[in-house]
Image (cartoon, rainbow, N blue to C red; front, side):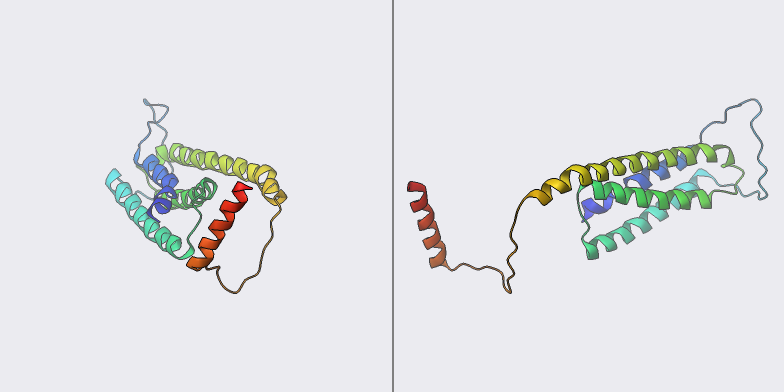
Length: 174
């Protein structure tokens, strides 16, 4: 359960780390001014604590979901989960640091990098789904199998099991 939870939150962690980096502006002599109406300044400590609080909330929420729904551990479902949680994290970080003067010069760069992380994951999920539907599922459907309805699980008594093993030995010798 811990493996699924932590592996599903790699993209939100990367996006949070992107928002901790203050990227330089292109023009260092005359940096672009912003037309923000508010003068709220957000320092690195606030972004760190905000991201930490969001990550802890996501870990708790994802743990509860994983505990009750027992989600799949295959790579495609973990990538899909990263895509969803990463989009939520990007939306939270952008909305909470949007109207600030101290972060506005790097906001576009941070949003682009976070969006690029999500686009890469989206492409991987798209290729994975295409591969699954075009090659894996048709092969699995082509295998013939019989389903037997049963009201109880099969159980073997010790004597029956020994008898079956004895028959198997006889069949091998023939």
